Amino acid sequence: MKKTILSLLFLAFAYSGIAQSQMGLKVSYLIPNYKITSHPPNSTESISVNNGINYSLNYKRRWPGLFNFGAELEYHQIGSHFTMEYKSLGADVYRDMDLTTNYLNFRLLPEFVYG
Image 1 (cartoon, rainbow, N blue to C red):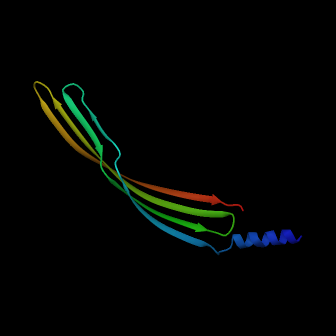
Image 2: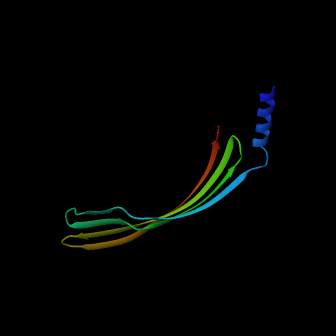
Image 3: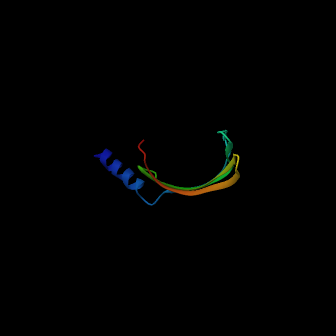
């Protein structure tokens, strides 16, 4: 009987309004790790990746019990640079392109904790 009352008391305390909130901000710098160059007949193609910045804002709310809730919002920016040169007898084509990709991630992360 005492264990049941004590367990119910702890369970009521766990789901009460007493909680701990955490907020975080993360900024990181992505370093490119590859550059691709190919030489098919009569042309040269080159692809390189530029540096990108990653911003992350996360929020977590912890209850002193079984259930935790976390939310995370991330923004990524990645840039790529494309260079292509094509030469033949009748034409000389040179292309230089920049591509920037921006995307946003939103995550809801429930956690169950025991122990």
